[in-house]
Image 1 (cartoon, rainbow, N blue to C red):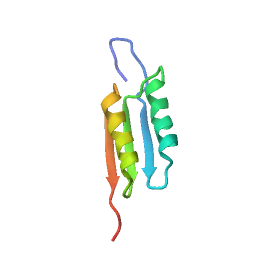
Image 2: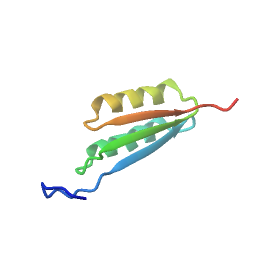
Image 3: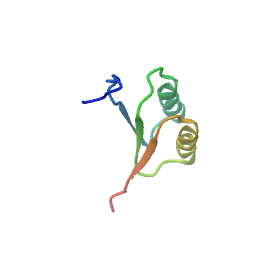
Image 4: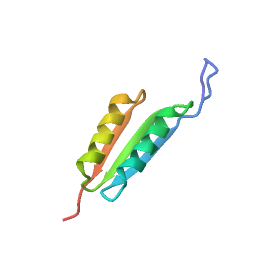
Length: 80
């Protein structure tokens, strides 16, 4: 990597999976932990594995609104 500024920081991506059986409190704690890190990720990707309840959806929305880094939410389609 050629960086004339001398900043050779590695890029960090965090991938988080969520599905309908996840405990909302545990999921919220996981996302809060990401936000509280002193070394912020360059991106967070939230993979939604099938339909999730309103509580988990709201936690994701809250996280996206509070994050000071890019967050991408990706839904895995339900097989028919």
